[in-house]
Length: 311
Image 1 (cartoon, rainbow, N blue to C red):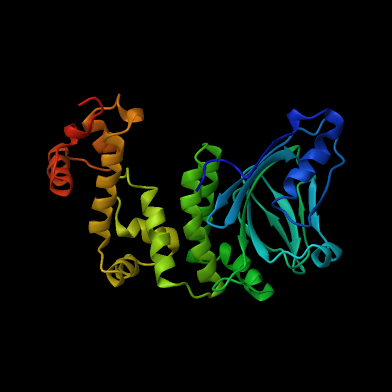
Image 2: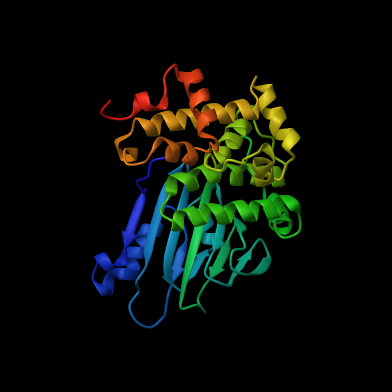
């Protein structure tokens, strides 16, 4: 994923009288056919960023409390075959969708179908922070109204729903930490879990790619196991191992190769020049320097020191 946002909007860049309209226009590039309503006091100071995620979009806004509404007329006028997984990290808000109403607490995700009307209400809050993963409906993932309702019911009641919540929170935390490339990798299991909850079939190659994407975000964890990746998807470690086996790989073998490739890249990078070989090895998930040197030489036919800049 590119680190450059699709949209990078700050209302402080425009005159005060134009800020709400500027914010609304920025949203329209991601949230198709949604009418925003604000009647609060003072100046509308807000920020909005969105990032590409494998054909989808991950968006983040920080704004004064307002209402986002997609009514029946806009559903017809601006068709949008997509769903939004929303999560707020700033407190409670209300959602009305598919003839249901939800009062959502901080950190609780909800799925919205853009082919049906909805209302998201933050009007009672001074400010809020909202993350949205916009996922295009496509072959293999085209949830119906009934699927969306079922997913929202499962989020708080099932192990898969809780796994989705954990993964979505981690994804949002990486955006807040300024690491959109890591957040993009974490979006893969979020999409996969939504597919599981909707009962969608997932192509084996895509499922393995999703597993690997999650593992890559945790290469620095020396004790990373297949069990840890399995938890992110709400599946068993045996299932993770089976996915790798079906592709002629093992999780342990793939993990070692990924760590070695990352170490090779960092050892030759100017940005890592000030770090010792031992520090780089640790940052790539190796506990034992002797083991690291041995497996590095075995893979690349050279020592780690041979790659240091200036040699």
